[in-house]
Length: 227
Image (tube, rainbow, N blue to C red; front, side, top):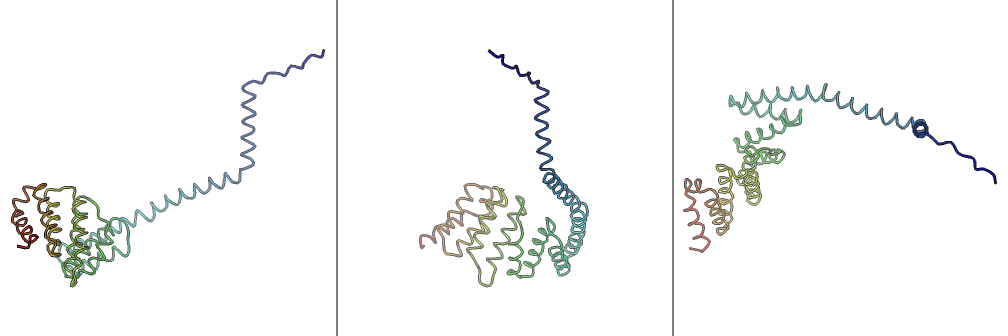
């Protein structure tokens, strides 16, 4: 009976070398593709760095300088000149400075009584923060309510958004809620108006006492009952 030939035992090192050879073969096979991908990643990284270093950074500085110039004119109550400078910021730059310029332009237009144009800028404005955000929405509601043909539905929606954004601020939230109630009164929705005033009284007792909310509740309920 012929003896079986004994195969030599492979060492872990030999197995590892074989695996490594397989990886090297795959790398060689896909070398061009891999280098292309690496090159693309490097190009993107360099592009981002170049943008931040040579475009975004200097642009941000220019934007700050431009809006600073507008702010000075605004503080000096040179409304027309300030309006022009804020509009330049909007046209030339983006980001936070242009966003704030949208609000500043809207405020100046409201002072002029140009509610239609103010609305356009307020709708472009990205409301942020617990104070500026809701105040901008309240101003938007004021504009809709002040149009030659008031849009009370949109005014109510803007005031409602101001309420939701103000996070139960003891001074701002009931103030916005009162504006909602005034819209409901103008629409003849006296029962709903009374509900808003009651909610103010329930959540913001101090504000309610200082602003005669009880009298508003009595009047709204009486009107709702047809008295």
